Length: 224
Image (cartoon, rainbow, N blue to C red):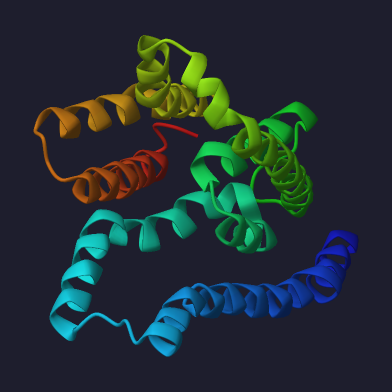
């Protein structure tokens, strides 16, 4: 009974206000993202015709459309509601926000999907946002000058391998928690990649394919 009262108080005092604030901030982010376009149209009369507009939109939708559905579903168990709002608004979800939240939850030993895990994840995400802003400012100010002094081989290696290394580290962190799932999750991703299908099909297959297999194995009581 006490846990139920705490959950109800958490929902009223934290979750509900988060929904209100998150809806407003995400809506503002969407609206303000169009301000440069409005400026170009109002100040200079520059605006693409409908054919080019739809072509550009279609290209982006084909490349990133799957993320609209996949990311909120796949990240929600770790981020929680409030963390999802912050992550979507701040960006760099899979590269920075997810590792930060997952590592913090793992270190503190909280169970993903619980209120405790959501609070820990939120604090970790907020910390990553502040840290990201600080180092991003430094990188923008001095990064270009630094890259000019590095050998081309080093720059090429950084551009090619940093992101795969980060994803590999994320997978390793998750695999340790559920090795029974990792034994088929990685082969599925590799198999899909071998067939050379478009990126969005890879994403959908890996996410929902693993979800379906895991659910079936869980219902069959093969994994816990």
